[in-house]
Length: 242
Image (cartoon, rainbow, N blue to C red; front, side, top):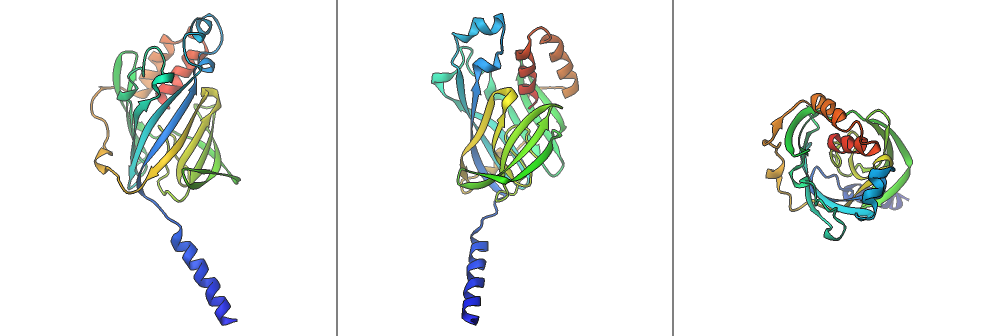
């Protein structure tokens, strides 16, 4: 009997030691957007619908260490790119410090590059512990959040990666977010691979180049510019401040 108990304890101990807890790594995210849905309805949408691909695919790189991260554009699928290219998406950078709950973002907006320093986005999360999914080899749990007052975010996170981050400014769960769907933005993000060996920690620095601007001032200007753009204007603002 003692031998059986010993073997059970040894097995449990082995499983606990085998479970990895990661605090440094590099994650590749694949983003897909339904362009036809994004443009909405109306004359503007009809003009472009037969001239653009229905879906576009992009890849981003997320590097993290010691509760700090940087998220940057990497490449796009040339076959599904929009006629105007990547709209200078390669300039966009999200730096997050989860200890100080602050962020510094560089965003290309209407022919100008801005540097936005602010607190991390406030997200109201509700955990859905009974629904799980495997992403990039990690067992993930589901959570539902709300951003921009009324936009739902469906996320899957793993507590094996300790940093409470995710793509763009999405954060605040008890582990790394590896999958996101935002139905009202017709977009999804999914981790395709996680590398915990080749981590270039020198990349985890806030961006420095760009016109310094307060987020609240920029968003007011954008609301005026996009006031007659319909649903596409709202989509554009969400994309800029996500």
